[in-house]
Image (cartoon, rainbow, N blue to C red; front, side, top):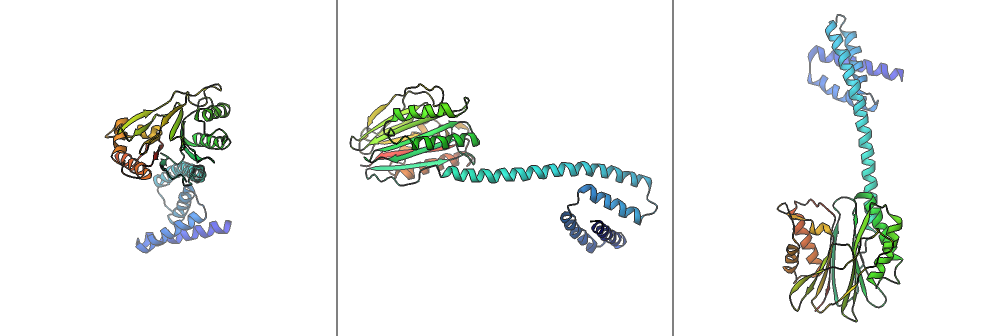
Length: 337
């Protein structure tokens, strides 16, 4: 180690001597190369200044007192800078580590969402779900039972970041255990409510809209746990009606009953589920009106369900300069003509 210091000292002395003699570009080039060696030796800024002072004192026997004093001040400045710089590097390394961990968590979270195709000839289905950040507080679900009944759901955790994502994963696994009840919307929400109430912090809540399409009856049943109302489109009358049901958000009280509504679903009719990230989108700085969402869907009724949700998302994302303020989930279930 001592030999290394002597070597660095001599290199710097030769380099400084050369520069003071002719002030050449070649000497400046050597200075840049020397800086790489400093980094390899993990030299701090104050050590570099101290090296310069030592070499300069050796070269200049009659150094003015003011210059010597100025180096003392510079050395103190660089000591402070070095401490701050090392702290900054430590924080940056930690931030990169957290960023990497979040990327892994976000990837794992995406695996919780269903991606299989719905094998139901008379149903046209589409969903788009995009997080505002790396982690999402939105969750969507769809599944077929052995009788061909289609269950769908959209949930929104009232919270952000990792805690919201963890709550989302809890909802997913809780729903996987409710296969015997999943075709009864009110029963599903009541069971989920008990799970949520026992397992998440009291300052966190989850909203959800759960629905089931019964192809044999051509009907659609829904229950809501304080979730953003969706829409149902009546093709015969060419009208959109708000789709809502009474029910408290999940996690407030263990003993809650949820209203269940059953509606006919005729050929061409469609059901829209969404999260509040859709209704809280902004156009020209103003929150979007629900009627505007209806108009966007109506303009695209000639398209397949997946293209409808994709185009509505793109239009709203573009209106917000591609900066989502909240997690965005939009789902459509349509009975084919």
